Every structure is written in structure tokens, then in C-alpha cells.
Image (cartoon, rainbow, N blue to C red; front, side, top):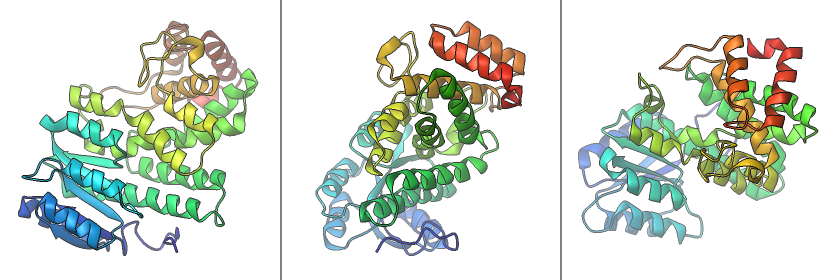
Length: 334
């Protein structure tokens, strides 16, 4: 049976975690921190030993270093994919190994931590991975929650993690309100838009908060990794049974009308309508909140940015609909 979604236990309570790192001190730090949240941890000190543990003892979560003598973290990822009941996976790596981290994420890894790290970041990533694993288990059971309900629960998980970050608190909820209202003006499926908006940034949960709080904007490595978050989030919700329209909206919400967005460089009508609307709503929601490198935008500035972004960042129809909504409901900018 999948673990309970009840609020009385932490996401890591009772979870079996395998920690693999050739540096014993690092492995010990990770084990000690996760055990504080109730995880049952086992350590391995080489990739080869990690593979032996994986194939001999089932676990819920693998946390592995990327570069190790002999078998690497990517070898462990490959081993996980061949298991009948694969665990969730978090990789640990140095900034110089970012290209390998991106490759690992493309292979299905659930999260990452960059070294040197705060043990609290590892606990954060592990909790996110276990929340997602619980939802996948519930969804795969088929009788407990429909896909829509599972995504609603995931939306609450996203909101809970956002509340822990003063710069992102309420972001997905604000995006959902805006997306639903703009979608109605455009004649789109507002219910789907609201669901997509609540979970559209779930891939950002894999990015440690400290990486998002760098003054003066984000460094190039952080920007590079953030570019994979739409793909990561879309893959996660697809595993939870989300329909294709919602998956496509999440995957493409960072595309730009002029083709200069990411991850696919789509432009114009090649961007699905739900994604264009979701991206517009998310941009408005982001402008209405402070970030570590800037203060929140005033309402008049938000409207000016929308107009300036017409046919560049945003489609004309989306801008017109957003301006109509904000004219009628200025409280959405508060």
C-alpha cells in the first residue's frame, strides 16, 4: 500500500533511503540529516557497492554522488531504470559537473543538490521527491484518486513549498486566478488552465531555494538548470496521469511568442493556446511579487510591460485578454 498522505508525518518518515558517496563524511552528513526526519538510511561508499545495494534491498529514494571511482552516479541511474520498482533519485554534484546533472535530469532523475551544500537543502529535495513518489503511488493504485484529484493534491504540495520561500509564497495560486480569468475571455478551458497553473512550476521544486536567492540575478549555472524545469515538471505530472493538454501547457509555459523562450524555442501559434495563456498569467504573477534582485512592480508598470511584450514575449490575443481582465479586476494586481 502507498504511504498515507495525512499531515501527521513528514514526507521522509519511514522511507528507505540509500545514500551513495565515495566521501564517507558527506554520506554521514546526509544520513544524519535525513534520519532527523524519520528516514531509514543505508550508506554505500562506491558506485559498485551502491548497485549491489540497489539490486539487493529495495528503497524509496537513492541519493548519489555523480562522479565516483569505478561506477558513476549515472551508472546507478541506469541501474534504477532497470528495477521493477525504481526508487526516486537525487544526484549530488559540483558546479563543474552541471552538464552531467542536466543529462541525469533528462534520464529521469527527480532532483539535484550542488556541492558544497547545506544539509537542509538535501532534506528539502528529499522531501519533494517523496511527496511526488507518494502521489505517483496513489495514482498508480488507480482506485484512490483520479488524476485530477492527484494534481489538486500536488498543487497543494507546490503551494506548501512556496510558502516556505518569502519570494515565491502564493505565486502558483495567483497564477491560477489570473490564468482562469484570462482563459475565460479567450474561450479556453478555464478548469484545465487553473489545474495547469497550480502545478506549472512543480519542476522548480528541484531547484534549491538558495540557488534562487542570489542577489543581482542568477548566475549562469543556475539559469542553465532552471531552463529544464518546464520539462521536468511536465514529466512529473505526466507520470501522475495528467491529460495531454495540461502536460503540454506545463512543458511550454516558458516559451515566448517571438521564439526566444525555452525549452523548445517554439514561437507564435506553435505554442499551444493553454501554454500561451499560462505563460502570460505566470509573467503577470511574477511581476506582482518581489524577487531577491528587485522589488515588486507597481500595477501601472505591469500593464506597461504587458503592452511592451505584445508579439514579443506574449501573443496579441493574450495581451488583449489580460488587459481586459486587469481593467475589470484590478485587485488581481494587488
